[in-house]
Amino acid sequence: MLGGRDVRKQIVAYLNERHKKLTRINNDPTRIYTDEASQCTRLSYYERVDPINSNSVELFQFLLTHGMRHSFENVESEYKTDNLTLVLTADTILEKELVVRMQITDSLPSSPKPQDLLYINACLYAFDKAEGILIYVRGDGKTSEFLVAKSAKMFEELIRRARVLSTLLKEKRVPIVEPSESCMTCKYYGRCYMMERKETSFSIESLFGKSKDESA
Ligand code: SF4
Image (cartoon, rainbow, N blue to C red; front, top):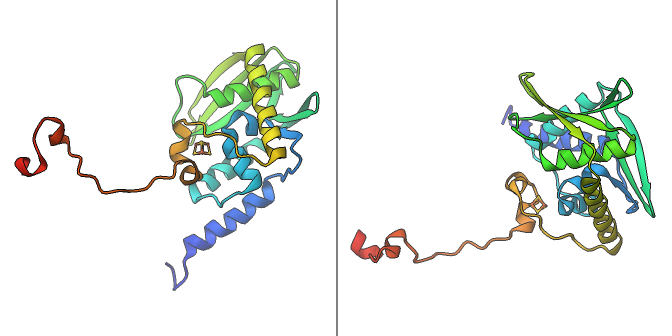
């Protein structure tokens, strides 16, 4: 609190407003942004149909990524297949050959994250290029880079995920839970993993044949 005002709450409310303005609203279920298909599709569904506000960490991460992407060319493309359009952007294309996509990260990974691989691979198809480079950037400027070659199998998987999301959006059905590490920091955790806290008489000691009373 500062001077009787909850400044933090005001800042988060302001950031949420900015987030809404900067995020492109897309109500057309036949147009799927590639990150909606590469990340958990249940998360993407909730973000379109029944979103909840983000916390300050998520908002700052979004703004940092948004700022970084707009420092580059941010080349947009669309990939059409049957009645589905996949929308995606590359940060830049070096020498008209190498697709570049950057990700801000807390810690540099030893191998690329699956959702980032799905994304950059889709870029290779949309821009008709053979290779791309995925660059992870930490706050102190340290980076790790991964060269990615085109994979038909990965692209089929991304299209499949985009189709599933598109169909479920049309039918107003929530996609299934996709358990992963990301769930631990996801704002929809409570919706996906509703838990009831119950008192239990279980104790570690009872596993070894000692009752709670005996071990006291
Ligand atoms: S908690 Fe996990 S399954 Fe649920 S929306 Fe978030 S990432 Fe998806």
